Image 1 (cartoon, rainbow, N blue to C red):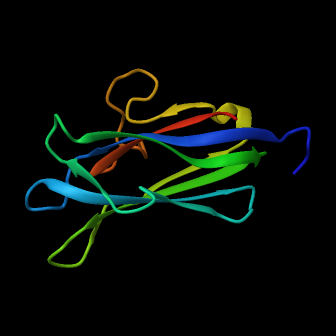
Image 2: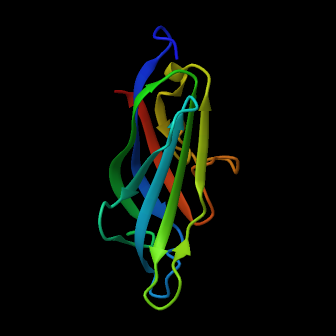
Length: 146
């Protein structure tokens, strides 16, 4: 990685929204996992919350949780890969998994700065190709200079 083109960035999961809790009572006990790699380097792995789980409902008034979870902070040049997984703990059967979120950033790191979420630029609903808008949950990321 050349010093001239490297940029130190921070990637934060600002919020998640659950559309399907995968639980009969419509309140899921969730754990989120992250894996971030840059410029071909080793992955940085994370878990939220660090211990236990968090309860999130699928009911529209209660289905959004603000996390402000920093999943990556470091120098990058031209590639960053972000993967997020959600797991709903199930006391009576096997755990259920949300659709995996994946986003690849390529090109100059300065071009990646901003908010990524459903309708990220206009506030409108995003199109069906928006990776932050999955069938069972939504995610909002913030990429900023660290």
